[in-house]
Image (spheres, rainbow, N blue to C red):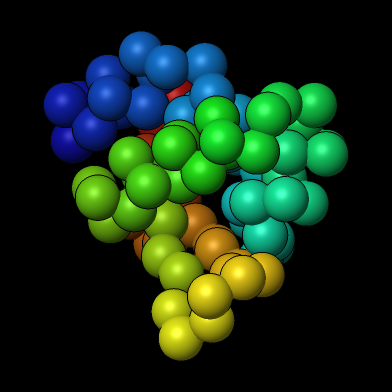
Length: 80
């Protein structure tokens, strides 16, 4: 578990994205909210998704995909 905590806290953007995906959002919406470039948000989402901390709710969509934190992600967030 502490490997995942370390993974999230090593990158400011990963931590920001994870903490702001409590409700489903798109990368574009998150980038506006967090005042980060959309590519930085998308990269953080992909990294978090690879560790099963975030999941895509609309995988069939090419644009406007919605993402949300997983239960595993919530557990990590509680420890941070």
